[in-house]
Amino acid sequence: MISNKQELALADLTSIYASRANGLYGLTLVNQLAHAVQSAYHARAAGLLDSVVVAALLHDIGHMVHSLGEHPAALGIDDHHEKIGANWLKRYFGSDVTEPIRLHVAAKRYLCTVETDYFSKLSKDSVESLALQGGPMSEDEVVAFQLSPYWKDAVALRRIDELAKDPQGPIAQFEEFTAQLLSSMKL
Image 1 (cartoon, helix red, strand yellow):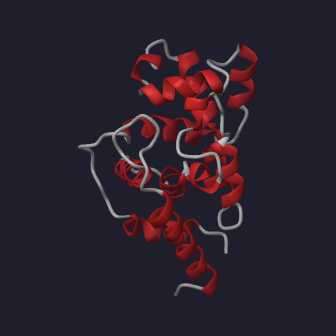
Image 2 (cartoon, helix red, strand yellow):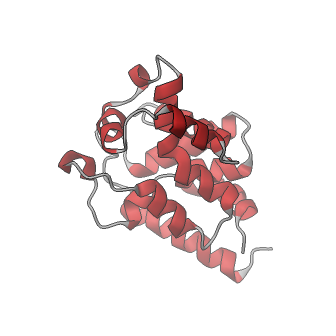
Image 3 (tube, helix red, strand yellow):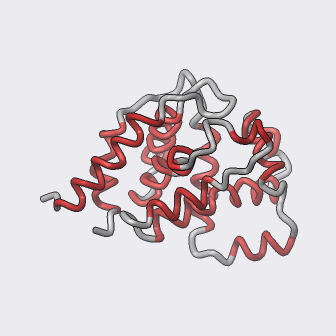
């Protein structure tokens, strides 16, 4: 049975993705909605926990709840969407969802540091934003990142993030992830 709070939360999230996720996602050929559902699809296909599937679905909500436009990186602005999104989602979800979201940009920086070929796998928009986000991590930043209890989930999310920018990729419906959203809600 869905509670009134869960029903309102689902309506809020569905409304955001229906009304604000139709613009192109950075320099890719997919929109925010396609990126979100491809991310969740890949997380679910990989057998990740429901909380990580939800984090994958919602990881870029920060782009849709700020007022900086669709591509602030082109203006040299780091929109800190990972922090904005994680903070915004705390009203509905616990740390198992919000922390991988908050850490997914750090995970990109981390992977660029610890894997020599990761940078070459980044899309144009990820390269553009990486410079604004601090570039590869220092050794001290790597150690600090690995102290987070959710760093491995954030790395898994980041790998999925890069896969989910394919105009020919799988396109699920946002509503297909209702069960995972409900099971992860802290309402």
